[in-house]
Image (tube, rainbow, N blue to C red):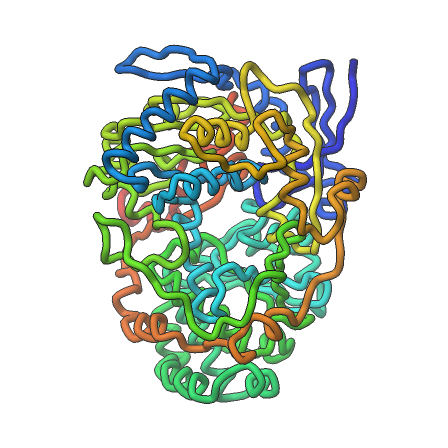
Length: 605
Protein backbone atom coordinates (compact mmCIF):
# COMPACT_ATOMS: atom_id res chain seq x y z
CA UNK A 1 0.00 0.00 0.00
CA UNK A 2 1.32 3.43 -0.97
CA UNK A 3 1.59 6.11 1.70
CA UNK A 4 3.33 9.47 2.15
CA UNK A 5 5.10 10.43 5.38
CA UNK A 6 6.52 13.80 6.40
CA UNK A 7 10.06 13.62 7.75
CA UNK A 8 13.28 15.62 7.63
CA UNK A 9 16.65 14.88 6.07
CA UNK A 10 19.63 14.22 8.32
CA UNK A 11 22.50 14.19 5.86
CA UNK A 12 23.61 17.71 6.77
CA UNK A 13 23.08 20.72 8.97
CA UNK A 14 20.19 22.12 6.89
CA UNK A 15 17.66 19.53 8.17
CA UNK A 16 15.37 20.04 5.17
CA UNK A 17 11.77 18.89 5.37
CA UNK A 18 10.94 15.98 3.07
CA UNK A 19 7.95 13.92 1.99
CA UNK A 20 8.73 10.23 1.65
CA UNK A 21 6.50 7.98 -0.42
CA UNK A 22 6.61 4.26 0.34
CA UNK A 23 5.06 1.17 -1.21
CA UNK A 24 5.22 -1.44 1.50
CA UNK A 25 8.89 -1.58 2.53
CA UNK A 26 10.08 0.16 -0.64
CA UNK A 27 10.82 3.89 -0.74
CA UNK A 28 9.61 5.09 -4.12
CA UNK A 29 10.04 8.86 -3.84
CA UNK A 30 11.65 11.55 -1.69
CA UNK A 31 10.86 15.20 -2.39
CA UNK A 32 10.90 18.52 -0.59
CA UNK A 33 8.08 19.44 1.78
CA UNK A 34 6.59 22.80 0.71
CA UNK A 35 4.94 23.19 4.14
CA UNK A 36 8.25 22.95 6.01
CA UNK A 37 8.99 26.44 7.45
CA UNK A 38 12.76 26.03 7.21
CA UNK A 39 13.37 24.57 3.77
CA UNK A 40 10.14 25.71 2.06
CA UNK A 41 9.97 22.77 -0.35
CA UNK A 42 13.67 22.66 -1.12
CA UNK A 43 15.85 19.58 -0.89
CA UNK A 44 19.20 18.79 -2.50
CA UNK A 45 20.51 15.83 -4.50
CA UNK A 46 21.49 13.99 -1.31
CA UNK A 47 18.04 14.27 0.18
CA UNK A 48 16.26 13.30 -3.02
CA UNK A 49 18.40 10.15 -3.27
CA UNK A 50 17.53 8.98 0.25
CA UNK A 51 15.51 6.12 -1.18
CA UNK A 52 18.43 4.77 -3.17
CA UNK A 53 20.66 5.22 -0.12
CA UNK A 54 18.21 3.28 2.06
CA UNK A 55 18.12 0.42 -0.45
CA UNK A 56 21.90 0.45 -1.02
CA UNK A 57 23.15 -3.06 -1.87
CA UNK A 58 25.91 -2.72 0.73
CA UNK A 59 23.56 -2.20 3.67
CA UNK A 60 24.87 -3.84 6.84
CA UNK A 61 22.22 -6.32 7.96
CA UNK A 62 23.69 -8.38 10.83
CA UNK A 63 26.38 -7.93 13.48
CA UNK A 64 29.59 -9.61 12.39
CA UNK A 65 33.12 -10.27 13.67
CA UNK A 66 36.38 -10.68 11.79
CA UNK A 67 39.16 -13.01 12.84
CA UNK A 68 42.05 -12.83 10.43
CA UNK A 69 40.35 -12.58 7.06
CA UNK A 70 37.30 -14.61 8.03
CA UNK A 71 33.98 -12.96 8.87
CA UNK A 72 31.31 -14.56 11.02
CA UNK A 73 27.77 -13.27 11.55
CA UNK A 74 26.80 -13.01 15.22
CA UNK A 75 23.66 -12.51 17.23
CA UNK A 76 23.40 -9.24 19.15
CA UNK A 77 24.01 -11.09 22.40
CA UNK A 78 27.16 -12.73 21.02
CA UNK A 79 28.45 -9.47 19.56
CA UNK A 80 27.95 -7.30 22.64
CA UNK A 81 29.33 -9.96 25.01
CA UNK A 82 32.44 -10.40 22.86
CA UNK A 83 33.02 -6.64 22.67
CA UNK A 84 32.46 -6.22 26.40
CA UNK A 85 34.95 -8.95 27.27
CA UNK A 86 37.63 -7.25 25.17
CA UNK A 87 36.90 -3.90 26.80
CA UNK A 88 36.97 -5.35 30.31
CA UNK A 89 40.26 -7.12 29.69
CA UNK A 90 41.95 -3.97 28.39
CA UNK A 91 40.54 -1.74 31.12
CA UNK A 92 41.79 -4.17 33.78
CA UNK A 93 45.28 -4.30 32.26
CA UNK A 94 45.79 -0.87 30.70
CA UNK A 95 43.21 1.39 32.35
CA UNK A 96 39.98 2.97 31.08
CA UNK A 97 41.75 5.27 28.61
CA UNK A 98 42.70 2.18 26.59
CA UNK A 99 39.10 2.13 25.33
CA UNK A 100 38.13 5.08 23.14
CA UNK A 101 35.14 6.46 21.27
CA UNK A 102 35.03 8.42 18.02
CA UNK A 103 31.80 10.20 16.96
CA UNK A 104 31.44 11.24 13.34
CA UNK A 105 29.03 13.45 11.43
CA UNK A 106 26.39 10.75 11.05
CA UNK A 107 26.35 10.19 14.81
CA UNK A 108 25.89 13.90 15.47
CA UNK A 109 22.82 13.87 13.22
CA UNK A 110 21.35 11.00 15.25
CA UNK A 111 20.05 12.78 18.36
CA UNK A 112 19.87 9.83 20.73
CA UNK A 113 22.86 8.12 19.11
CA UNK A 114 25.31 10.97 19.68
CA UNK A 115 24.15 11.32 23.28
CA UNK A 116 24.64 7.58 23.86
CA UNK A 117 28.11 7.61 22.30
CA UNK A 118 29.22 10.26 24.78
CA UNK A 119 27.72 8.31 27.66
CA UNK A 120 29.68 5.16 26.78
CA UNK A 121 33.05 6.84 27.30
CA UNK A 122 31.79 8.54 30.46
CA UNK A 123 30.45 5.29 31.91
CA UNK A 124 33.81 3.60 31.38
CA UNK A 125 35.71 6.51 32.92
CA UNK A 126 37.68 6.94 29.70
CA UNK A 127 39.19 10.25 28.61
CA UNK A 128 39.77 8.84 25.11
CA UNK A 129 36.91 10.71 23.46
CA UNK A 130 37.32 11.99 19.91
CA UNK A 131 34.94 13.59 17.42
CA UNK A 132 34.84 15.23 14.00
CA UNK A 133 34.80 18.65 15.71
CA UNK A 134 38.58 18.63 16.01
CA UNK A 135 38.93 17.83 12.30
CA UNK A 136 37.11 20.66 10.55
CA UNK A 137 36.32 23.40 13.08
CA UNK A 138 38.36 23.20 16.32
CA UNK A 139 38.86 26.97 16.12
CA UNK A 140 35.18 27.68 16.79
CA UNK A 141 34.81 26.24 20.32
CA UNK A 142 38.31 27.49 21.17
CA UNK A 143 37.56 31.09 20.19
CA UNK A 144 34.21 30.93 21.97
CA UNK A 145 35.88 29.66 25.14
CA UNK A 146 38.72 32.17 25.25
CA UNK A 147 36.56 35.19 24.40
CA UNK A 148 33.42 34.42 26.42
CA UNK A 149 34.45 31.81 28.99
CA UNK A 150 32.20 29.16 27.43
CA UNK A 151 33.07 26.89 24.45
CA UNK A 152 29.53 26.22 23.26
CA UNK A 153 28.35 29.59 21.95
CA UNK A 154 26.97 29.39 18.41
CA UNK A 155 26.51 32.77 16.68
CA UNK A 156 23.72 32.68 14.10
CA UNK A 157 22.93 35.17 11.34
CA UNK A 158 19.89 37.31 12.13
CA UNK A 159 18.47 36.52 8.71
CA UNK A 160 15.38 38.67 9.24
CA UNK A 161 17.07 41.94 10.24
CA UNK A 162 20.72 41.85 9.18
CA UNK A 163 21.57 44.00 6.16
CA UNK A 164 25.25 43.06 5.74
CA UNK A 165 26.10 39.36 5.53
CA UNK A 166 29.51 37.91 4.72
CA UNK A 167 30.70 34.33 4.21
CA UNK A 168 34.39 33.51 4.49
CA UNK A 169 35.63 30.22 3.04
CA UNK A 170 32.04 29.03 2.97
CA UNK A 171 29.98 27.95 -0.04
CA UNK A 172 26.41 27.48 1.26
CA UNK A 173 24.96 26.70 -2.17
CA UNK A 174 26.84 23.38 -1.96
CA UNK A 175 27.51 22.90 1.77
CA UNK A 176 24.23 24.38 3.10
CA UNK A 177 26.21 26.26 5.75
CA UNK A 178 28.76 25.62 8.45
CA UNK A 179 27.34 25.85 12.01
CA UNK A 180 24.58 27.95 10.45
CA UNK A 181 22.25 25.72 8.45
CA UNK A 182 21.02 27.31 5.22
CA UNK A 183 18.28 25.24 3.60
CA UNK A 184 17.09 26.59 0.26
CA UNK A 185 20.49 28.31 -0.06
CA UNK A 186 20.18 29.94 -3.48
CA UNK A 187 16.98 31.74 -2.52
CA UNK A 188 18.39 32.74 0.87
CA UNK A 189 21.60 34.14 -0.61
CA UNK A 190 19.58 36.12 -3.13
CA UNK A 191 17.56 37.52 -0.24
CA UNK A 192 20.80 38.51 1.53
CA UNK A 193 22.00 40.22 -1.67
CA UNK A 194 18.79 42.11 -2.52
CA UNK A 195 19.26 45.88 -2.09
CA UNK A 196 19.53 47.59 0.28
CA UNK A 197 21.01 44.43 1.80
CA UNK A 198 24.51 43.34 0.78
CA UNK A 199 26.11 39.91 0.62
CA UNK A 200 29.90 39.64 0.48
CA UNK A 201 31.84 36.43 -0.06
CA UNK A 202 35.54 35.96 0.65
CA UNK A 203 36.83 32.78 -0.97
CA UNK A 204 39.99 31.69 -2.72
CA UNK A 205 38.03 30.65 -5.80
CA UNK A 206 34.90 31.65 -7.66
CA UNK A 207 32.12 29.54 -6.17
CA UNK A 208 28.42 28.93 -6.68
CA UNK A 209 27.84 31.25 -3.71
CA UNK A 210 30.21 34.04 -4.73
CA UNK A 211 28.36 34.29 -8.06
CA UNK A 212 25.24 35.31 -6.10
CA UNK A 213 27.03 37.87 -3.92
CA UNK A 214 26.89 41.64 -4.08
CA UNK A 215 30.69 41.58 -4.05
CA UNK A 216 33.36 38.93 -3.64
CA UNK A 217 37.06 38.91 -2.84
CA UNK A 218 39.52 36.18 -3.82
CA UNK A 219 42.49 36.25 -1.46
CA UNK A 220 45.39 33.84 -1.57
CA UNK A 221 44.63 30.69 0.44
CA UNK A 222 45.17 31.07 4.17
CA UNK A 223 45.24 34.88 4.20
CA UNK A 224 41.62 35.65 5.15
CA UNK A 225 42.78 36.86 8.56
CA UNK A 226 44.73 39.70 6.93
CA UNK A 227 41.58 41.16 5.35
CA UNK A 228 39.88 41.13 8.74
CA UNK A 229 42.89 42.69 10.47
CA UNK A 230 42.88 45.54 7.94
CA UNK A 231 39.10 45.97 8.17
CA UNK A 232 39.09 46.18 11.96
CA UNK A 233 42.06 48.57 11.94
CA UNK A 234 40.24 50.92 9.58
CA UNK A 235 37.07 50.83 11.68
CA UNK A 236 38.99 51.57 14.87
CA UNK A 237 40.99 54.40 13.31
CA UNK A 238 38.52 55.94 10.89
CA UNK A 239 35.10 55.31 12.36
CA UNK A 240 32.54 52.55 12.08
CA UNK A 241 32.72 51.10 15.59
CA UNK A 242 29.85 51.03 18.06
CA UNK A 243 31.40 53.10 20.83
CA UNK A 244 28.50 52.56 23.24
CA UNK A 245 28.70 48.78 22.86
CA UNK A 246 32.48 48.89 23.30
CA UNK A 247 32.25 50.96 26.47
CA UNK A 248 29.76 48.50 27.94
CA UNK A 249 31.26 45.19 26.83
CA UNK A 250 35.02 45.60 26.28
CA UNK A 251 37.87 46.45 28.64
CA UNK A 252 39.74 49.60 27.63
CA UNK A 253 43.12 47.86 28.00
CA UNK A 254 42.07 45.13 25.57
CA UNK A 255 40.94 47.72 23.05
CA UNK A 256 44.21 49.61 23.39
CA UNK A 257 46.20 46.41 22.85
CA UNK A 258 44.12 45.54 19.81
CA UNK A 259 44.85 48.91 18.21
CA UNK A 260 48.58 48.33 18.71
CA UNK A 261 48.44 44.81 17.29
CA UNK A 262 46.66 45.91 14.13
CA UNK A 263 48.75 49.00 13.46
CA UNK A 264 50.85 47.25 10.80
CA UNK A 265 47.84 46.10 8.80
CA UNK A 266 47.76 48.86 6.23
CA UNK A 267 46.06 48.60 2.87
CA UNK A 268 49.42 48.13 1.15
CA UNK A 269 50.54 45.27 3.41
CA UNK A 270 47.15 43.57 3.25
CA UNK A 271 47.04 43.81 -0.53
CA UNK A 272 50.57 42.41 -0.86
CA UNK A 273 49.78 39.43 1.36
CA UNK A 274 46.29 38.59 0.10
CA UNK A 275 46.58 39.58 -3.54
CA UNK A 276 43.37 41.62 -3.23
CA UNK A 277 43.28 45.04 -4.88
CA UNK A 278 43.46 47.99 -2.49
CA UNK A 279 40.30 49.51 -3.96
CA UNK A 280 38.38 46.30 -3.21
CA UNK A 281 39.60 46.30 0.39
CA UNK A 282 38.60 49.94 0.80
CA UNK A 283 35.14 49.22 -0.61
CA UNK A 284 34.68 46.44 1.95
CA UNK A 285 35.40 48.93 4.73
CA UNK A 286 32.91 51.37 3.21
CA UNK A 287 30.24 48.66 3.02
CA UNK A 288 30.62 47.80 6.70
CA UNK A 289 30.39 51.47 7.61
CA UNK A 290 27.23 51.85 5.52
CA UNK A 291 25.44 49.08 7.38
CA UNK A 292 26.89 49.44 10.86
CA UNK A 293 26.19 45.91 12.00
CA UNK A 294 27.49 42.76 10.36
CA UNK A 295 26.72 39.03 10.26
CA UNK A 296 29.75 36.95 9.28
CA UNK A 297 30.11 33.17 9.08
CA UNK A 298 33.18 31.09 8.25
CA UNK A 299 33.38 27.66 6.63
CA UNK A 300 35.94 24.92 6.20
CA UNK A 301 37.77 26.95 3.56
CA UNK A 302 38.85 29.06 6.54
CA UNK A 303 38.63 26.72 9.52
CA UNK A 304 40.95 24.11 7.97
CA UNK A 305 43.83 26.53 7.30
CA UNK A 306 46.93 27.13 9.41
CA UNK A 307 45.59 30.57 10.37
CA UNK A 308 42.12 29.30 11.33
CA UNK A 309 42.37 30.49 14.94
CA UNK A 310 43.38 33.99 13.86
CA UNK A 311 40.61 34.25 11.29
CA UNK A 312 37.92 33.04 13.67
CA UNK A 313 39.18 35.32 16.45
CA UNK A 314 39.15 38.36 14.17
CA UNK A 315 35.64 37.47 12.95
CA UNK A 316 34.49 37.65 16.57
CA UNK A 317 36.43 40.89 17.09
CA UNK A 318 34.75 42.41 14.02
CA UNK A 319 31.32 41.61 15.46
CA UNK A 320 32.26 43.04 18.83
CA UNK A 321 33.73 46.34 17.60
CA UNK A 322 30.67 46.92 15.39
CA UNK A 323 28.27 46.04 18.22
CA UNK A 324 26.91 43.11 16.21
CA UNK A 325 26.99 40.24 18.70
CA UNK A 326 23.86 39.39 20.65
CA UNK A 327 21.88 42.28 19.16
CA UNK A 328 19.20 42.50 16.44
CA UNK A 329 20.57 43.14 12.97
CA UNK A 330 23.79 41.28 13.70
CA UNK A 331 24.08 37.78 15.10
CA UNK A 332 22.26 36.05 17.95
CA UNK A 333 23.49 33.11 19.99
CA UNK A 334 21.43 29.97 19.55
CA UNK A 335 21.00 28.01 22.80
CA UNK A 336 19.38 25.03 21.07
CA UNK A 337 15.63 24.49 21.24
CA UNK A 338 15.90 21.06 22.85
CA UNK A 339 18.99 21.50 25.03
CA UNK A 340 18.56 25.19 25.93
CA UNK A 341 22.18 25.52 27.07
CA UNK A 342 21.53 29.07 28.27
CA UNK A 343 19.73 27.66 31.31
CA UNK A 344 23.03 26.27 32.64
CA UNK A 345 25.61 28.86 31.63
CA UNK A 346 26.74 31.29 34.31
CA UNK A 347 29.27 34.10 34.45
CA UNK A 348 32.68 32.48 34.16
CA UNK A 349 35.17 34.90 35.68
CA UNK A 350 38.00 32.36 35.62
CA UNK A 351 38.78 30.53 32.40
CA UNK A 352 38.71 26.74 32.62
CA UNK A 353 42.28 25.49 32.83
CA UNK A 354 43.70 23.75 29.79
CA UNK A 355 44.88 20.20 30.39
CA UNK A 356 47.74 18.28 28.78
CA UNK A 357 47.07 15.94 25.90
CA UNK A 358 47.10 12.14 26.08
CA UNK A 359 50.21 10.27 27.21
CA UNK A 360 51.77 10.08 23.76
CA UNK A 361 51.17 13.80 23.07
CA UNK A 362 51.30 15.65 26.41
CA UNK A 363 52.44 18.81 24.64
CA UNK A 364 49.02 19.22 23.01
CA UNK A 365 46.82 21.68 24.84
CA UNK A 366 43.38 20.22 25.46
CA UNK A 367 40.40 22.51 26.04
CA UNK A 368 37.21 20.72 26.94
CA UNK A 369 36.47 17.06 27.55
CA UNK A 370 37.77 15.35 24.42
CA UNK A 371 41.16 14.73 22.87
CA UNK A 372 41.96 16.16 19.42
CA UNK A 373 41.89 13.67 16.58
CA UNK A 374 45.48 14.62 15.75
CA UNK A 375 46.53 12.53 18.77
CA UNK A 376 44.54 9.37 18.05
CA UNK A 377 47.05 7.64 15.77
CA UNK A 378 49.91 8.44 18.16
CA UNK A 379 47.92 6.95 21.02
CA UNK A 380 47.33 3.74 19.08
CA UNK A 381 50.95 3.46 17.96
CA UNK A 382 52.12 3.99 21.54
CA UNK A 383 49.87 1.17 22.74
CA UNK A 384 47.76 3.48 24.91
CA UNK A 385 44.56 3.23 22.85
CA UNK A 386 43.76 -0.42 22.23
CA UNK A 387 40.01 -0.57 21.62
CA UNK A 388 38.13 1.99 19.51
CA UNK A 389 34.38 2.29 18.97
CA UNK A 390 33.46 4.36 15.91
CA UNK A 391 29.95 5.81 15.94
CA UNK A 392 28.84 6.90 12.47
CA UNK A 393 32.13 8.20 11.13
CA UNK A 394 35.05 7.39 8.86
CA UNK A 395 38.45 8.46 10.20
CA UNK A 396 40.13 6.88 7.18
CA UNK A 397 38.59 9.54 4.93
CA UNK A 398 38.55 12.34 7.52
CA UNK A 399 42.06 12.11 8.98
CA UNK A 400 45.23 13.21 7.19
CA UNK A 401 47.65 10.44 6.15
CA UNK A 402 45.08 7.71 5.59
CA UNK A 403 47.75 5.03 5.12
CA UNK A 404 49.28 5.68 8.53
CA UNK A 405 45.82 5.76 10.09
CA UNK A 406 44.94 2.41 8.52
CA UNK A 407 48.20 0.85 9.73
CA UNK A 408 47.43 2.12 13.23
CA UNK A 409 43.92 0.64 13.13
CA UNK A 410 45.45 -2.75 12.30
CA UNK A 411 47.26 -2.62 15.67
CA UNK A 412 44.05 -2.25 17.67
CA UNK A 413 42.82 -5.28 19.54
CA UNK A 414 39.30 -4.28 18.56
CA UNK A 415 37.93 -1.75 16.09
CA UNK A 416 34.15 -1.66 16.50
CA UNK A 417 32.30 0.22 13.76
CA UNK A 418 28.64 1.21 13.96
CA UNK A 419 27.32 2.20 10.54
CA UNK A 420 24.55 1.78 8.00
CA UNK A 421 26.47 0.92 4.82
CA UNK A 422 29.75 -0.97 4.37
CA UNK A 423 32.75 1.23 3.63
CA UNK A 424 36.52 1.23 4.09
CA UNK A 425 36.10 1.46 7.86
CA UNK A 426 33.99 -1.69 8.03
CA UNK A 427 36.57 -3.43 5.84
CA UNK A 428 39.29 -2.95 8.47
CA UNK A 429 37.04 -3.39 11.53
CA UNK A 430 37.07 -6.37 13.85
CA UNK A 431 33.39 -5.91 14.69
CA UNK A 432 30.70 -4.36 12.50
CA UNK A 433 27.36 -3.42 14.06
CA UNK A 434 24.39 -2.44 11.85
CA UNK A 435 22.71 0.80 12.85
CA UNK A 436 19.36 1.97 11.60
CA UNK A 437 19.29 4.48 8.80
CA UNK A 438 17.65 7.83 9.25
CA UNK A 439 14.31 6.70 7.81
CA UNK A 440 14.19 3.69 10.17
CA UNK A 441 14.18 5.56 13.46
CA UNK A 442 12.24 8.27 15.23
CA UNK A 443 14.45 11.32 15.66
CA UNK A 444 14.91 14.91 16.73
CA UNK A 445 17.92 17.16 15.98
CA UNK A 446 19.02 17.05 19.62
CA UNK A 447 22.40 18.63 18.89
CA UNK A 448 21.85 20.16 15.47
CA UNK A 449 18.83 22.37 16.13
CA UNK A 450 21.35 24.78 17.69
CA UNK A 451 22.54 25.54 14.15
CA UNK A 452 19.12 26.49 12.75
CA UNK A 453 18.60 30.02 11.49
CA UNK A 454 15.45 30.15 13.60
CA UNK A 455 14.76 29.05 17.18
CA UNK A 456 13.13 25.75 16.32
CA UNK A 457 13.22 21.99 16.44
CA UNK A 458 11.41 19.16 14.70
CA UNK A 459 10.44 15.52 15.00
CA UNK A 460 10.07 12.59 12.66
CA UNK A 461 8.68 9.13 13.25
CA UNK A 462 10.29 6.10 11.64
CA UNK A 463 9.17 5.98 8.02
CA UNK A 464 9.95 2.34 7.18
CA UNK A 465 10.71 -0.84 9.10
CA UNK A 466 14.40 -1.49 9.85
CA UNK A 467 16.52 -3.57 7.49
CA UNK A 468 17.80 -6.92 8.75
CA UNK A 469 18.90 -7.00 12.38
CA UNK A 470 19.83 -3.31 12.54
CA UNK A 471 19.26 -1.46 15.81
CA UNK A 472 19.24 2.17 16.89
CA UNK A 473 22.63 3.54 17.82
CA UNK A 474 21.56 4.37 21.39
CA UNK A 475 20.39 0.77 21.90
CA UNK A 476 23.72 -0.67 20.74
CA UNK A 477 25.65 1.66 23.05
CA UNK A 478 23.38 0.77 25.97
CA UNK A 479 23.76 -2.98 25.37
CA UNK A 480 27.56 -2.75 25.27
CA UNK A 481 27.58 -0.70 28.47
CA UNK A 482 25.30 -3.24 30.16
CA UNK A 483 27.62 -6.10 29.26
CA UNK A 484 30.58 -4.19 30.73
CA UNK A 485 28.61 -3.82 33.94
CA UNK A 486 27.66 -0.16 33.70
CA UNK A 487 24.63 1.73 32.46
CA UNK A 488 24.20 4.76 30.27
CA UNK A 489 20.41 4.91 30.61
CA UNK A 490 18.45 6.64 33.37
CA UNK A 491 16.33 4.52 35.70
CA UNK A 492 13.22 5.21 33.62
CA UNK A 493 14.69 3.63 30.47
CA UNK A 494 15.91 0.17 29.46
CA UNK A 495 17.02 -1.48 26.24
CA UNK A 496 13.35 -2.43 25.81
CA UNK A 497 12.45 1.26 25.54
CA UNK A 498 11.59 2.81 22.19
CA UNK A 499 13.32 5.57 20.26
CA UNK A 500 10.46 7.87 21.30
CA UNK A 501 11.05 7.02 24.96
CA UNK A 502 14.70 8.07 24.72
CA UNK A 503 13.86 11.22 22.77
CA UNK A 504 11.24 12.15 25.36
CA UNK A 505 13.87 11.80 28.09
CA UNK A 506 16.31 14.00 26.14
CA UNK A 507 13.59 16.62 25.62
CA UNK A 508 12.87 17.27 29.29
CA UNK A 509 14.25 20.81 29.15
CA UNK A 510 12.96 21.61 25.67
CA UNK A 511 11.40 24.99 24.95
CA UNK A 512 8.16 23.15 24.08
CA UNK A 513 6.64 19.94 25.45
CA UNK A 514 7.74 16.80 23.64
CA UNK A 515 4.13 15.87 22.83
CA UNK A 516 3.65 19.21 21.09
CA UNK A 517 6.80 18.69 19.03
CA UNK A 518 5.61 15.21 18.02
CA UNK A 519 2.17 16.50 17.08
CA UNK A 520 3.26 19.58 15.13
CA UNK A 521 6.50 18.10 13.74
CA UNK A 522 8.06 21.61 13.60
CA UNK A 523 7.91 24.05 16.51
CA UNK A 524 9.57 27.47 16.58
CA UNK A 525 9.93 30.60 18.67
CA UNK A 526 11.68 33.96 18.46
CA UNK A 527 15.47 34.48 18.36
CA UNK A 528 16.95 35.14 21.80
CA UNK A 529 18.99 38.32 22.14
CA UNK A 530 20.90 39.58 25.18
CA UNK A 531 21.39 36.39 27.19
CA UNK A 532 25.10 36.12 26.41
CA UNK A 533 25.86 39.74 27.28
CA UNK A 534 23.74 39.60 30.43
CA UNK A 535 24.37 36.09 31.73
CA UNK A 536 27.56 34.68 30.22
CA UNK A 537 30.26 37.32 29.79
CA UNK A 538 32.46 37.87 32.85
CA UNK A 539 31.39 41.27 34.19
CA UNK A 540 29.44 41.67 30.95
CA UNK A 541 32.64 42.06 28.90
CA UNK A 542 34.23 40.11 26.09
CA UNK A 543 37.85 39.04 26.33
CA UNK A 544 38.81 40.93 23.21
CA UNK A 545 42.51 40.03 23.15
CA UNK A 546 43.24 36.56 24.57
CA UNK A 547 46.99 36.07 24.90
CA UNK A 548 46.88 32.84 22.89
CA UNK A 549 45.69 34.76 19.82
CA UNK A 550 47.84 37.80 20.50
CA UNK A 551 50.93 35.59 20.40
CA UNK A 552 49.77 33.87 17.23
CA UNK A 553 49.13 37.16 15.45
CA UNK A 554 52.68 38.18 16.33
CA UNK A 555 53.89 35.15 14.36
CA UNK A 556 51.57 35.59 11.39
CA UNK A 557 54.40 35.20 8.86
CA UNK A 558 54.80 31.58 9.94
CA UNK A 559 51.16 30.92 9.09
CA UNK A 560 50.98 32.44 5.61
CA UNK A 561 51.49 29.74 2.97
CA UNK A 562 54.42 30.18 0.57
CA UNK A 563 53.79 31.29 -2.98
CA UNK A 564 53.03 28.50 -5.40
CA UNK A 565 50.31 25.91 -5.84
CA UNK A 566 48.23 25.15 -2.78
CA UNK A 567 45.46 22.63 -2.24
CA UNK A 568 42.31 23.99 -0.60
CA UNK A 569 39.20 22.24 0.68
CA UNK A 570 35.99 22.03 -1.34
CA UNK A 571 32.54 20.65 -0.64
CA UNK A 572 30.69 18.58 -3.24
CA UNK A 573 26.99 18.34 -3.97
CA UNK A 574 26.23 14.65 -3.61
CA UNK A 575 27.92 13.72 -0.33
CA UNK A 576 28.85 15.25 3.02
CA UNK A 577 32.15 14.11 4.52
CA UNK A 578 32.09 10.30 4.39
CA UNK A 579 28.31 10.10 4.30
CA UNK A 580 26.29 8.98 1.29
CA UNK A 581 28.52 6.51 -0.57
CA UNK A 582 27.30 6.33 -4.18
CA UNK A 583 25.26 3.35 -5.36
CA UNK A 584 25.26 4.33 -9.03
CA UNK A 585 27.13 6.78 -11.22
CA UNK A 586 24.07 9.02 -10.88
CA UNK A 587 24.82 9.36 -7.15
CA UNK A 588 28.55 9.97 -7.43
CA UNK A 589 30.55 13.18 -7.27
CA UNK A 590 33.52 13.25 -9.61
CA UNK A 591 36.72 12.90 -7.58
CA UNK A 592 38.60 15.73 -9.24
CA UNK A 593 41.01 18.49 -8.38
CA UNK A 594 40.17 21.87 -9.88
CA UNK A 595 42.94 24.01 -11.33
CA UNK A 596 42.82 27.17 -13.42
CA UNK A 597 43.59 26.47 -17.10
CA UNK A 598 46.27 29.17 -17.22
CA UNK A 599 48.02 27.71 -14.18
CA UNK A 600 47.79 24.19 -15.57
CA UNK A 601 49.16 25.25 -18.95
CA UNK A 602 52.08 27.08 -17.38
CA UNK A 603 53.06 23.94 -15.48
CA UNK A 604 52.51 21.50 -18.29
CA UNK A 605 49.53 19.86 -16.61
